[in-house]
Each structure stands twice: as C-alpha cells, then as structure tokens.
Length: 219
Image (cartoon, rainbow, N blue to C red; front, side):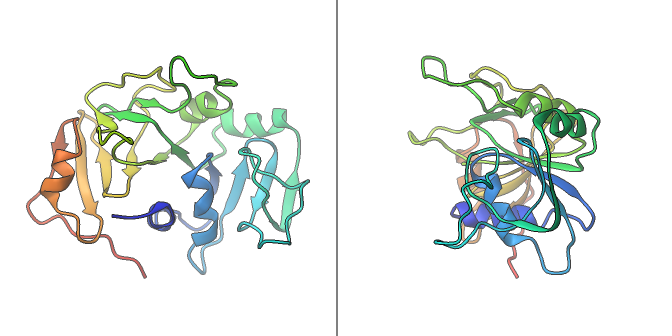
C-alpha cells in the first residue's frame, strides 16, 4: 500500500507541461514536492496565489506565505499574490487545467463528498464547490477505506455532496481508478504488492477490472 507521499507521487505523474493546477487541502498539497523534472506547471491556491513551490524546509518558513490549508509554502520566481475575488474568477472562468482534491467519499457515478460530516463542527464548504463545478479535470487523492475499514468508493455517497458527476480519476493507497461515463470504477493500476481481489473487497461501488492490471511504476 502507498503512504500519503506515495499517492502524491503517483498523482504528480498526471500533470502535464504548461498546466495550471489547483491543489486542495491534505494529500493534494504534497503533490507540489513531486512535480517531475522538466515539467513546467503553475500551482494555484484559492486564497490568492499563483506559483507555489515545494514546502519550505524547517527553519525557512515564512508565516506570511500560506496555502488554502494555512500551511506555510514557498514561492517560485514569477509568482503572483492577489485577492480571493481574482482567484475565484480564475476558477469560475475555467482557467485551471487540473484540480486535485481530497475526498471523504466518491460514488460510482463521480459524485464527491469532501466537506462535511453531519454532527461535526465545520467552518463551511470553502472553495471546494466552485472547484468541482468549474474544473476541466479533477483527480481525487484519498484513502480507499475509512478508519473502520469501510469502503469510501461507494454506489452512492452517504455524506452531503460537494459536486455531482464531476470526478474523472481517483488515486488511493491501493489503486488508480477512472470513473466511467456510464458509471462504475475502472481499475487502471494497483499499488505494488496489492492484488486485484484485495481492491475488489475494499470497493463497495461497481468495479471493473481486467485480470492483468499493472502495478504502479515510480521512477
């Protein structure tokens, strides 16, 4: 199984040269550390920043430079800082090529729930609703099962939805999966040492898998 950094490394391979990419809170923020060499991308944070770099080393943090998750970050030459209105203007006008989000649940038809667990205090949905409504392409970075061992890839989400029929690809500690247009999860790759049968058992939603699904390859 992959750890959180392993999930981020695999997602980083999906980023193409010239992309503008929004990184959500949690595992997605780690993707900034694994952008492949020779790939020129611009990372956007919804609190008003273009041009994020890797996380700073300990002792080199600048408390005035934070991402949407209030983590300290670095900036790259040519980066730009601006207000939230301009940031959400970029998002709503579909200037972002790829959005990478965390999730609590994803359904087999591409619905996502990632902002609220009923009964627990929450500050609000934040920018997630705008991102899933406006993004050209969305990849979800998430754990395949919850702490109780229950699948988070479901026939239908049980938690309040953030967006409907919007997720295209999911990367978990077990697998890479596409969400099919007609519904269902298509197993594309499996984590090293993880069997197809194990992934089937961990997936409550409809899963389509060939007999010879390749393992993920990390350079």
